[in-house]
Image (cartoon, rainbow over all chains, first blue to last red; front, top):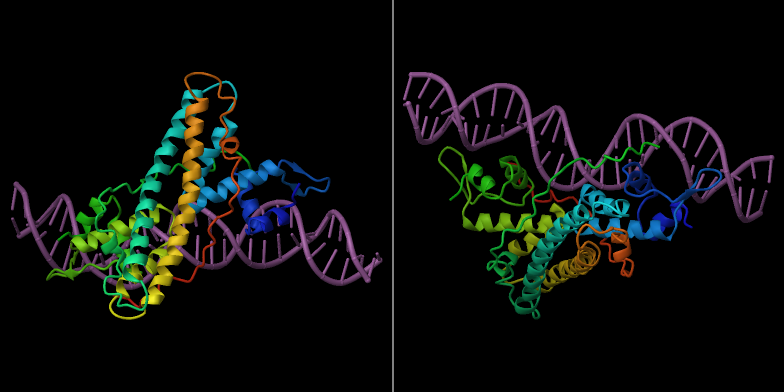
Length: 153
Length: 153
DNA sequence: CTTGACCTTGGATTAAACTCTAAGGTTTAT
DNA sequence: ATAAACCTTAGAGTTTAATCCAAGGTCAAG
């Protein structure tokens, strides 16, 4: 069991951020102490890790709320629906993956080819390195507000 | 040569966004028409594609400005410095890649294992699927304001 | 039994990244 | 030649995601 300060320290975020996520239905502590302190368990911590991961790779809190709703939604029904949601997100993730692999390749070739030592950096251009890129995968976001869960404290 | 409306249509963004990027030193049209219209060439278009790609995978405009500065910085000096910048970004990209691969794997197993048809979605939990995750790569951003290039129109 | 570091709330402020408005100039189509 | 659909600018407004503040309750150490 973590208190808000402990959990926030664990992930190097502000306690305020945790309260913010709670207010917006992303992460609620599984229990409260007698005096009302938030108490987060290991599952809560995993969920937070998930949120931060997803955020780090460019998903909005809206997107993440959608993803997390899958967990809430489980048990006996709407399995096809769930699969649909997952597959949509999977497509987005794979598009991002393709982008990133492209980046990584470009950056690597930049790092290797051009900057071997104290040589001239004549061709140090990311755009040059990327010039052979032609998938325009650039993810279009659908943005439906994520405050759809009536949490209001 | 594209005018602002053409280029923005090409990438499904607002013309305003292009002006915004210009104001913040991310992308300037290579020329102007007699009457002052912005005229973007193919290189400008490539640069924009790069910006949107980077944005889509979670880099801030600050980060992107850093990346693009590599291009500006080329020719004969500061090669080690450039390499340092590239390698830093490469680390970030690879951290994001690892995150995303994790996501993709989890989502795939979710899609395959659990949701064959109209069965129970009892185990449809992303968190369950992600439970074996233990790298806390969650990128910490350094945020130095990106309006360091004195473009002011 | 009080000091200081925690915690609570609601509401204000910030920063990044757009997005829009107002006031006006340009271009193309009828 | 004039309307519709572009373009220009400066500046205000919006959204997202925090982050801070004020007023106060809680708890462990001296």
